[in-house]
Figure 1: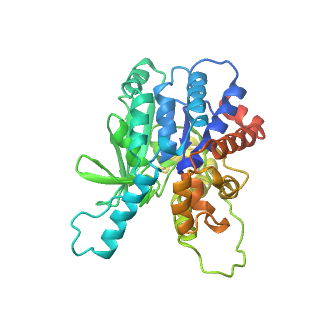
Figure 2: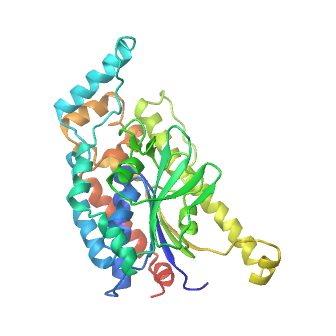
Length: 376
C-alpha cells in the first residue's frame, strides 16, 4: 500500500489509557529523532480522546509531545482525576442514599458516583486548545476528533477540528460535527456512565464516547486516513468461560458492562474493516470505479495488551486512597472478580507505571511491524 495519511486511533478505558503512553513511547524510540508528526490524523475516545488531544496540541514535535504525556501520566494520582477524599465520598454516599430512600421527596437526583472536577482543572492547566487550529494551519496536523454519546438522541457524535477540505458526515446513528475542540468535549468523551457526570454541549447531554460507538475506526477514514494504527486498552480476545460458584458482585457486573462498552464495538469494527479490505483488494481501482464502489483498502495495525489489565489492577489495588478502598470494598471491587472495574479507576503510579511498561514492551515486540507502518 502507499504512503497515504496515517491516523492514530486511541480507544477508551479510564486509567487503562496509560497503556497507550507506553506504546507511544515505543513508537518514539522506533522513529528515532525524526522531526514532525507521524500521525496527521488523531482520533480518540474516552481517555484516549484526552491523549489524542494532547498529541494534537503538541503535534509540531511528536517526540516532545510523547515525553510531556509520559511525564504527566507517571505523576498521576487519583486526586488529579476525581475526588477520593473521605468528605467527598461521604457527601456522594449521602446524596445517593437520600435519592434511593426518599426519592419521592428529593427533587434533585445525584449526577454521578464520583466528582471529576479535578480533571477539568488539570486539562485547563496543561492543554492550550487554541494550539490545535494553529497546528492545522501550520500543516503539522490534518485533523483531530473525539467521540461522545448523546443521551437524548442516542447518536454517536464525532466532534472534529480539521483542515478546511474535510467535510462533516452522517451515517446511521453516527455523525461527524466540525467544531473547535475544548475541555467540554474531553470531559464528555471521558464521562464513564454512572461514574462521571454527563456534560452538556449545545442542546444535548453527552457521556462516554465508547457507548453506542458502532464503528470506532470509521472517523479516521472519514477524516482521510489510508493507514490506521489502533491502540487498544484491553485484550480483544479474552479467555473462555470459567467455572464460578458465587453470585457476581456489583463490581463484577459493572466491570463486565464497561468492558462491553469499551471493547465490543472495536472488535466488530476491525473484523468488518478486514472483510472490506479483502473484498476491495480483489478488485482494481478501475473495477471499483466502474462498479460504483467508493471504497479503498485501508492499511491497519492493531496493538492491544498482551496481558489482562484487570489482573494487573488487582495486584496494585492497595495503592488506592484508604477512603476509596473502603467504598470499593463494599461493592466487591477489591476482590479478584471485581478488579475489572478497579482497572478503570486506578489512577495511581504503581498501576500506571505497570501499564506503561506493558505498552512499551508490547509495541517493541512488534518493532518491525511498527517500523513498516511508520515507513521508517
